[in-house]
Image (cartoon, rainbow, N blue to C red; front, side):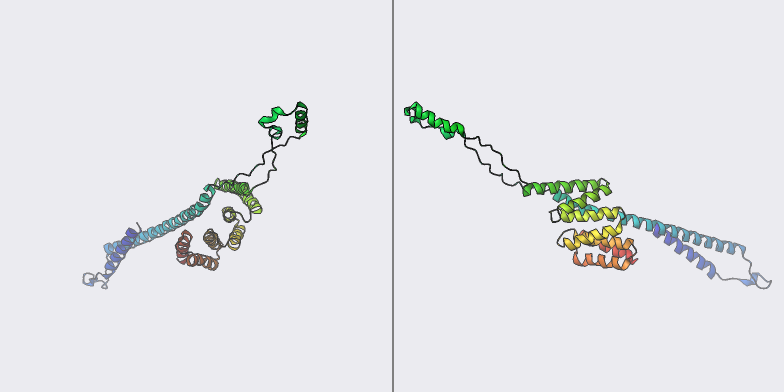
Length: 280
């Protein structure tokens, strides 16, 4: 559509140039040698009118292109969130290995304690009575074992709490998700899902347009979990935040850091596209 408008504009300019280049025959106009060519003037005004119309259409098309570019940028941002969420969901669905069962001490049964061999029939009744009496006085031993939280149960609790917080954010309850992720990081600062929780805490702040808190959360992820797979995404999001705040120089630094340090990743591809948009 834009190409057609440009072709029409070129055609109008060509007609205008042709109209100006037509020779003027002054011999047919003896009065002062001036030509009063009404039809030619009408055609010239028509060409100018078409040129102005084409210019207006080009401006409208330019606005449509800009809107489409913004829409594409928003879709790319959503796609980035979906890809960066993939590893969190995979980790959340990974089955937890069960620890070996805790051995429980079996209490001796009174019958086994006082059991007699097959020759017990030869023992006198008095002796049998004396042997049975102590057995009756033996206190019953219960199988009660003190329950302590095992690492496996703690890990299961961590996974469950992370999944609940993530589902809360995904369902749009951002304020509640922020509180749940903050409480999770207090209880499991070095847990298996701590880096993911830190990332989604920053994402929740970003959705709420609390950009300063979001930037601080992403920076904390980078500093405390430098080996996390979420680091490229955190750098990308900081670049987006700086761009939203009109800090273009800082935004380019973060986005360039993503493309240079993590080439080939989804975050690097999105950072390159964002840099190309900023260069326009």
